[in-house]
Image (tube, rainbow, N blue to C red; front, side, top):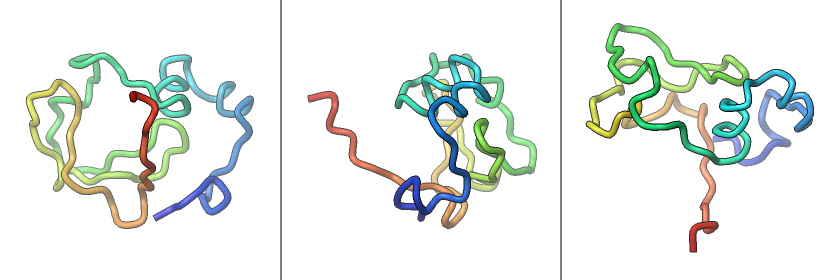
Length: 93
């Protein structure tokens, strides 16, 4: 898994990300935001395929791991190996 921006294969400045993303994409992808439930056109899509990052186009998930969570967001139980990094978000409390 990519551990930091330094080891990720796509590196852009915040200005470059802001220029290449819509305001909503920037909010979700760069500022830890969340899109509104039931607004994603991908929520009810179950055809075979690969789901890619809206920011850089790299593959993140396959349709084989997609499921209907009932939450209104596209849900996957596992990313493609090495495609996703995680961090702990302590900003709520």
